Image (cartoon, rainbow, N blue to C red; front, top):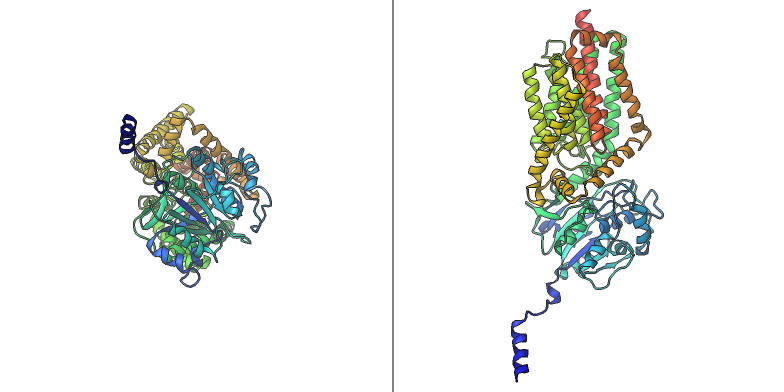
Length: 609
């Protein structure tokens, strides 16, 4: 009788075992090559209707490969970090896939890469919690496999491979399970040779209708492929490790229209095709007119060409106020020409030797600062900004724009009074470094010492190494203050500044810094053009130290411009050393500083002749 009573007590009071239905379910439907332009009411009716009511966005499928092919995409999905697949990687993307049993090879091949990616990490982490990952399809097997190449069966997490033609069937089955469903255009399709933005959509538990975003992009409706794995882990309460560079996806605001999603993709494609023609055309015309003007001693023409060359950079941002990408590169060049003419006209209000060049630089700096204060919308897919296809940044200020800002604001400050220099210093450093605006660690560390050099020289004092070192310490303290304040915010709202504080605290910051240094060097020698940058910079330094006679007369008459150029060189050198992909900083600084300096030279020759 006692045993019967004890059994009854146990049945009544002990908690019931967890039912299988209480375990979260996640289905990732991966469709190589799927773009929003493929989604129509006729071709993909299920996906077309789902987009109107689910959370959706545009997906950057950037991997570690030069071209993001299916094998790279599937492995990146399973790593939560950028992977380059080994085995048959060619351009255009091949149809064949290495398969799940290549995972040990893929992990070894990516172990020493700067990204620090671990293919199969998603399945490894879930397995430690007793959760398996199953797959349908060869590519899906590569994403679902653990580091040994093993894939589960009938698991809470499923990765499904589909084609554009079969996408509706796969999505319908996934949604019917009641699981959290993520639809991702996991890579470029077989036969593709160019990068594009792709489809990302989320529905089911954990996602309200809206625009998708993540802390890795900080901009709706942009998401990265590396964000998928941390999103899956979050559904099971597992924090993403440092080997995963993505952040969990979430929905915010209203559901974007299909037309808006397509427009974002068109804009990114247009930026990819327009950047090189823009620089070739603008810099080529600038060099031609400047050379002819100086050779024929038409100093007024040379001055206007120099002013226009600097203003053209600012005009390139202003062109993004209108949707030039719907018409292509000619529209961008036309809008740049109009903006350049307007800005150059404003510079003609200046009267002193440095006034016009100072106004030109000030206008360019004003455009960049105003853009940062209003969300950096003009930088996104701008020829002097950043690209979501490259996926270096999606918000804040990038290295290209920092090179523009540093040169423009330092030369603008050099052409004005000391009180204005102090005001510009405080404003630009705050805007550049604040997490909600520029979120730029390397920029602050480069700008503060450069400003110190400028102020010291303008005050007639020597810019000694000790004084510059003190300024560098001040810059580091400013960055630290920004980073600590950012780290105090919720994890979903943190930028890379706050996350870096966390990496310092858990001891993983060294690996992050090492990868950034390797990225910087690899970019410098990525192509013959970037490899020539040190030669170009060395030439600029030589001309600065041993100026030709016209430039020497400018330095003699207005030492302030020489101080400004030295400050620009300081910011460029530090910007290169302190940023990954930092080679862009001196390159764009030269694009701003050289024509402005030649405009000053031309004005000097015209007014003294």
